[in-house]
Length: 295
Image 1 (tube, rainbow, N blue to C red):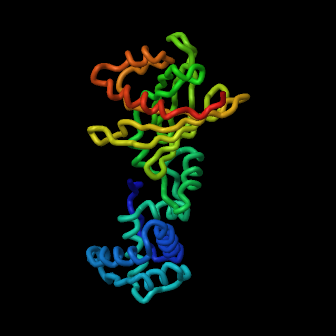
Image 2: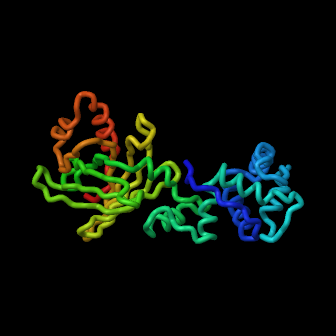
């Protein structure tokens, strides 16, 4: 998944050279210098005609590593190397270079909050930018299911909306902890941070400020390919005055109204139509994985 931006022009400055070298070093965690050298050489031969006066590069691991490890003002013998590496990284491995470029140029974060960029930077030491494509797929309404903390046999059905206003990372959850439709609703406010193939939901309960944190994985796209269909994960809750507990949690993209309340097992099963029975079975099987809690 890529963070799509318009490729900035290479200006040949020492600062831009250093961005290229730092990106190559970060990329080396998942792509060896030898493989980088081979890929860049092949890419340059296919694309060099786009830049009049430029020459394709011929690299091996030793030549590429020497360039990457050199000072920012160092000028390699292959004069087009830094420029071609710049465009190769932005076009083929944008997540390795985009955040470095944004930090160097003061480019604004793609999300209007401080938490997501900070946590993304903390969890992506290689410099990967925020995965905006994952946040786009996440946008929408979901039914979210978890065992009740009052009676673990009962199931809480919550509604979650992801993507609020101009912030694609913001989410809100509405939940009700007691049985019946008259239960007073509670709300969770938070932000979603994609990492690797998972999403961290960093939230807090609005009235108590207690942390409400969960990680979702197994995020297949829906039939249209424009959004996540579902996710399964683990929820961590630490209410004031109580020991923290962890619960299985599931989310399913849903259209229409979501009944926000707590249900007995029989009531919960009745929520699903005949065609949705496999979904009910999946959720119950997830819950049977167990709960980490205090007796």
